[in-house]
Image (cartoon, rainbow, N blue to C red; front, side, top):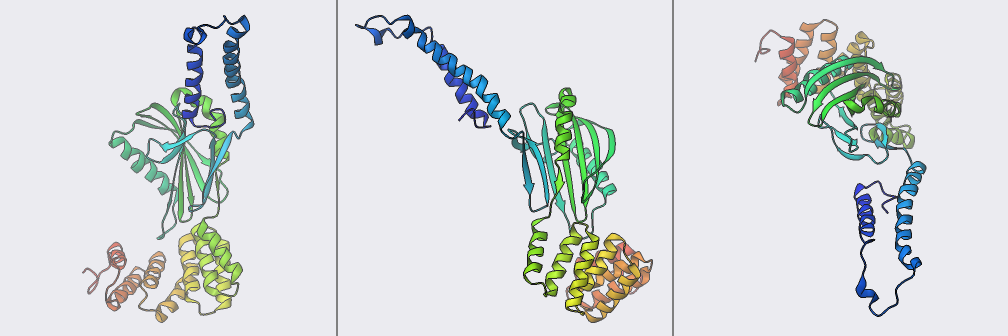
Length: 360
């Protein structure tokens, strides 16, 4: 069990057993031999041979088992859509940033945090800025880490997303550390992968971290897989294509998302959610804003009480430079709604709208 398991407790039990056997070698259990003839040299040598065999098995078979077993294991998060690898035998814990992490007793680890939101896609420059100025600086202010220095920065190639790698030196409670921080933007998802090694061992862990970085990949989140299954089961259902378009837009697949929304409109030409999705796609990822604004204007005329449509129309008009018209849409939506969402008032404030009731 000790040889086959990565659990260090089992190795400790095995070592204790061998240590106990070795400690009994010089002892003579005389009471067991009262009235019995003295054993031969073979009898006396048998315990030594048995212990030597056990030690040999431990030292010889253990490395063989580890060599035949997997060097790396794969961890996949189906909710956020990512997969990564780490050396077999690393245990679960937490790193210097409070991320869930897998590491070893020397202090090397891989930590990861996945985030998602619904308002707008992530921006890689803002993600980088937030990581440096909020996470690292915040932990430094709290005294969890010190002496933070950015040693280098380079693009990180990752199919399906945009990424950058920052090399950062810092001191944590475990001592000086060299960290490789991979920041990934993928539409409405963001990932932060932190590879950490003690400064004294950083060069030795370089090839291992290179292999782990290559093994990092983006997968389809569960929600996207569910949407695909629904479309396959009900290919004529317009709402199924809308949901597929929403999930594809969430991972930044603009082309496929647009095709899904178009198929929803083919199934139901007046499908409002498909019209909304196409316009939001243009706003989020730089499409034809004028066409999107015309579509949402017509949709707002049909659904004047829908706060989400009003907010999207205001955002489109503001992006086109029509601030006064954006304010008008927001104020009209506020006047209509008996209990308007706070988000509409926040937009009015952000646009510095002027007029009757706009400052209230």
